[in-house]
Image 1 (cartoon, protein in one colour):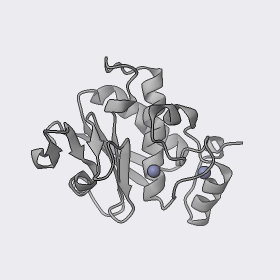
Image 2: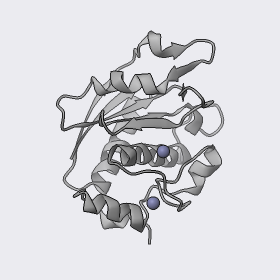
Image 3: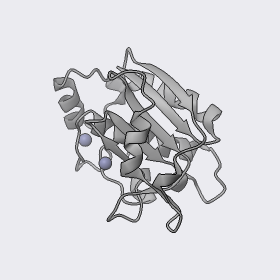
Image 4: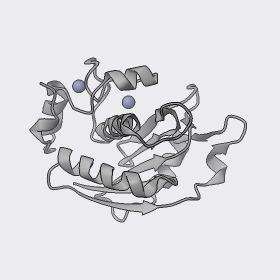
Length: 184
Ligand SMILES: [Zn+2]
Ligand SMILES: [Zn+2]
């Protein structure tokens, strides 16, 4: 498997390596490339809400992939929403093979510090959205990374591991997962 990270922020340097290591630990034999892009398209930004239209942004993020085998993962230092929801932590589209995570709500407080808690939350949301790209739906197991989070409290409650059931679904689709990253 190959991932292409599209980093849309200033925190770039710090988190690229962390996500790179994380993805390669979960998905053996995976390679990760990245691009840093600091000027996301204004037409998908709602100035009144101060949020990006996360669903429309997916197509734009998908445009950064180098070929159709890659899974594109946008990491945006912004807030995002889709119509009908106040905000989203992320969205994904399996047909576009593209995931995205909006990190503004993952900070502890408002000081935008990249600390351990932020990194934990980021890993969970990145893997969650990639799980959707790989065909997984939401999971009832509150500790499973595929459990739905509507608040930061719920993000903190889950882990960045797949439960057995989600793991088996992925395995059946021929996706290789490091067993250490499966809940026991
Ligand atoms: Zn989800
Ligand atoms: Zn699960």
